[in-house]
Every structure is written in structure tokens, then in C-alpha cells.
Image (cartoon, rainbow, N blue to C red):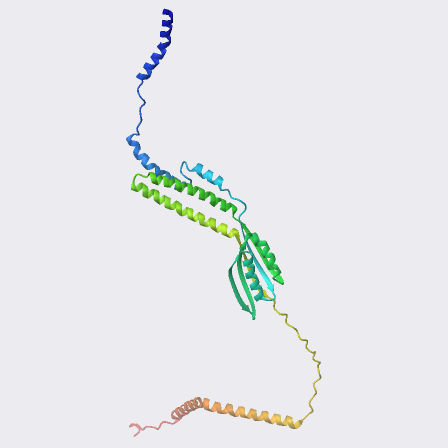
Length: 321
């Protein structure tokens, strides 16, 4: 009996010591943030936003979301922008213009622009239409049947799949960054923080709209192909009328007629005399002032010589007397 009591005390002793040790242990301390850490916590949203705007990557915590969205929206298929130019020679331009316009509507497309003009009295036109890319080749085949001859045909295609995929990735990152910045805006403590974060958010939203606009442009251009149709009339071939070959006929020698020759000679002599008299009349009326001046100069010279040639009278001096 006594041994059983001692064994019970030996078994209960560890339990009693454990209970006493647990009661004596102090409660765990609750560590409060130091006063110096408060400014750091207030500046964290602004620093994260500025780093995201500088690097173009979403803040921490948004990368996993970006990758997940990118995997949920993979690019499907190729995105190719197709264009074509066809120069058609037709018999009836008016009818061809109507048929091309109707063809654009039948293919589910639309007429972008049209222009018509007259050239040498014949009508020509240029029509630009957009058709779904799925009907691009069918439309070209139908247009070939409208022409007598296809004078020129050019087709081109631009693959923008890589550019579109880059825009998709950029859009996902920008939207994830903008979502994270909105969370930072909610956590802002001061007005200055709110203004800085809101400015960054406005810049991100502007970039998002630009990327969406570029993506819509690629989607529209790849969904509808552009075909430019030049309509030219077939000009009538000018008819050449054969001309009769003229045979050379010998010219008859006129008979000798002395009277006619004398008459011609007298007429020529009269004309010569008339010309000579006309020349003398012109010379008289044009040269008489010069002749008058010359005569006057000659008269003065002769008079001066006569005066010098007269002998001087002898003057008697008083001595001779």
C-alpha cells in the first residue's frame, strides 16, 4: 500500500512541475512599430508608384497578376493587313463603277472614296473600298472578270501579329500597374501623397488609352482589307483611210512670147525708176540740212581766204615826205 502511494507521487511530480513552469512564464510581448518607422510607411506608396512609372513594370505583388492575365488572353492566329491596287481596262466605265460599288456592299464591305474624271472625252474613275479580309481573294477574282484586260495588279500584306502581341502585353502590365496604384491611392495618408499618386495614375491611364487605340487600329485594318480599283475606258482604234498615190505628170513648157517678156521688163523698169525717185526724194528731205551746213562752212572758208589774199596799201611815212 505504501509502495503504491510512493509510485503515484513519483508519476504526478512531473505534471506538477510542468504546471508550475507554465504559470510562471511571462506572456508574449506585442511589438508595436517604432515611432521612426511611421514616415517610412507613409512614403512607401509614392516610392513604389514612382519606381513603377520609371521602369514600366507593375509594383511588387502585381507581377503574378500580370502573368496570369497574359496567360488567360493569348494572341490567336495571325494578324495581317492586306492591300491591293488593280488597274482595269473596261468597255463601259459607268457600268463598271456601278458593279464595283455593288460588289463592295455584297461582300460585306463599304466604299471608302471615289473619284471620276474625263480624259479626251472618255470617263475614268478611281474607287477605294474596304472588304472583310476573309473575302479579299474572292473580291479580286470578281474584279478581274469585270475587265477586258487587267493592266496592273499589286497586292501587299503586312504582318502585325508581333506588334499586336507586344501591345497586349503592355496593356496587361499597364492595367495591373494602374490597379496597384489605385490601391496605393487608397492608402495615402496626406494630400501631397494623394496628388503625386493621382498624377502617376493619370499618366498610366493615358498610356492605356493610347495602347487600346493602337490595338483597335490594328484590329480594324486586319479585319478589313483595302482595294483600290482604277477604271480606264477602252479607247476606239482610229481608222486609217488609204490615200490614192498621186502619179507625177510632166509639166508642160509654156511657149515663147516676146510681147509678154517686154511687158514684164517695162513693168520692172517702171518699178525701178519709181524706187530710184523715191530714194532721191528721201535723200533730199533727209540730207538737205547737212548739205546746207557744209555749204555754209565752205563759204566761210573761202571768204576768210579772200581777205587774207588782198594786198595791203602802202602807208607813207613822214620821213619820205
